[in-house]
Length: 171
Image 1: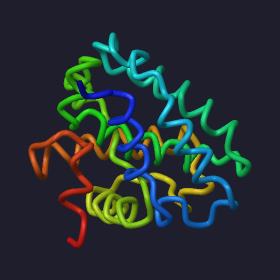
Image 2: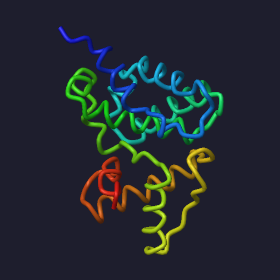
Image 3: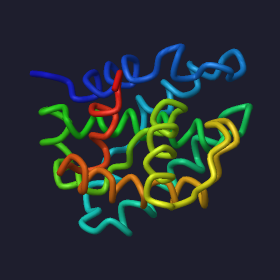
Image 4: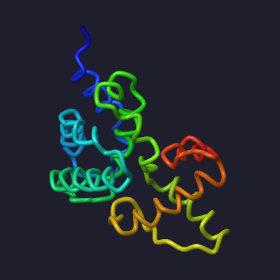
């Protein structure tokens, strides 16, 4: 019988590579992978509305941020978004924790390439939001960018925002 914990640990390990945590202090990767491997996915099981999911995601982001020596909210959110995307799309974990319903609520993982693509589109639409870098990203800035990403994802591609990375990658 397949051990669901092993599937989660594998996804934690493949979701977070050196490029994901570029610029973070030594030891951050093991802290992050340990956190993701042991994250109780039941936390998200009953998130049937976006605001409920977002509250749970915000809490987990704070927990992870506080474990990381850099204390970077932006990096914590980025790795959670990458991890949750993979978890929701894994047939075993998604079924075990009833996570498929989260797809419309998932955020696009913010990094420089994705943020720059969104900034370009924002300028074309005379919208403005703040982006410096992932290291200094705070919750309020992220919320603004994610709201805009949701609009772009639907308007331009007809998808949920978590898939923007697929469309932006090597655009």
